[in-house]
Image (cartoon, rainbow, N blue to C red; front, side, top):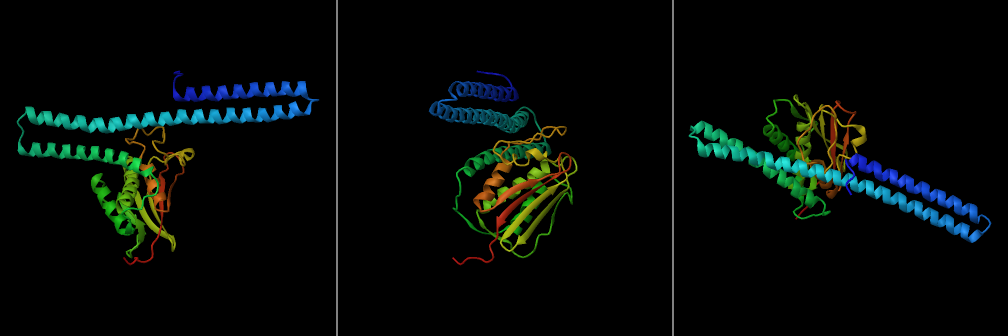
Length: 304
């Protein structure tokens, strides 16, 4: 049965649940009135009433969650389709131009560069989808090693600045010690988590990025990697939801930012697989946001 938009569907099931609860209350009150002098039927009626109410409430909650999950999956499919279709269409256009027209060497090199960039975008989208699938399989400790997290962060900052062609000072580091800051884990997964947070800040910073990266040690056993931006911010009610798979925050007035809704899900999954966590802070829309990645620290290299 197709009811309409997701919000209308959710409202329908909530209303249906309320009506069923009211009917159950009415039936139970009638039962009590008719059997108030008979102890056993009265007790059984109250017990069955409680079970019916609990079942209706649980069923309504389940239906609402399923509707929201389907809405997020539809949004994910639309986003992935766009992320795949756009670079493919661009590559095809440039290839058709190269086939039909005689171009000088400079133009050909320019076209090749654009097509390589579109190819990287395609591979990045596919890689995020694959990583999201792997992240759901739980704790995998294959290929774990001791990683200098400070060096990893500095390399990721340089790579992100080049990839997004950020001006000098737009993405800068602060409070990163020169001494080794070791964590134990999968280097590729850790780099993916750090890069996702940096690229997320770059995408949501608007026209004038101002991003500060910190790596601190609040205690001897913990590292906290933080990325602070002055971008569009996050509504407070959505701070706990943004790390869910497929979820994308709705920030009115700032347009639609490209993405699949998987980046932050991957970040939190990687953090938890490595014994840490990820969380976000924001004062609200238009006030920027700060993302934190917390990991356990290793103090000395283990002997082989």
